Length: 393
Image (tube, rainbow, N blue to C red):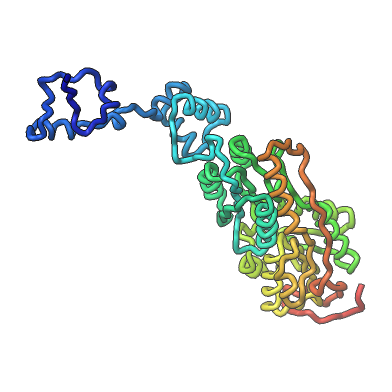
């Protein structure tokens, strides 16, 4: 019977891939330790199979290896066409990267929700609404907050692209071009900002600002100071423009202080001295937490709200009913906004064609104790007196 020699450590089915084995180089006897040791140290066939690298992908796509690396690690930094070529080439040569598994076509059933400041109560109801809508559709929410930092926001968003099926950007501080670039990589909905070519959900800022000005005009006020929000806030720009137009129509004077790039209670408190320097009869703040800070600052300066100065905010967050006096504010449907964004994003992921026009959510003025009839004073509250010298106008 013919004797069949077997290579130590290698299955018979694997011999053919190594080619013919020379009898002088192989001994079947287990006692020949020197030759056995050398053979056992050789790589197995499974280890010798070639694996595609980024250099193979680069050659197939006609780009540099660094471009391939960037496309998988930070896809927002390459064009959509380049990314498409890289991923197609990767699939062709059999390259697999664990960096961004979502870009290979697999579904994660997760959505990224990126907010600028998770400590701002504006986002609590919005997050709640998005979470409820996503959960109902079998999706999870991956939440990130970026501390009002545009670069950090971009870095985090790009890093999450592979782990999610779509992105919700809330009050983004990134540039329009950066947002468009990321939107070409993954389905996206932008909240509280309008960007052409990207699906958006916004509030009716123009109507809200006008209603606030009209309310103050009805109370006899003729000078308004606007406490501005972040320089990179789209909503801030829209509110300031609408305030100026409404004040012009109603023959009121309006001035601006700020910007407050971190729109918090502390920022509102700190800017109060500048507010009082304008001797306003009324203040409108970019958001409720800034307005609450202004109220605290006015109280510290012994200026009474609303007897001396009326204050209006935006958003109608939960704190607006806790502050004393309760805050008059332009209310936005925050929970509904979150639900609308998540629902529409999931529909786009499923193949729906998004509307080219933004979805505009309605607003309403909620009148509370922080606004009142203007009273004429002998001197400005900014100079430390609040005595009434005449009847209400």
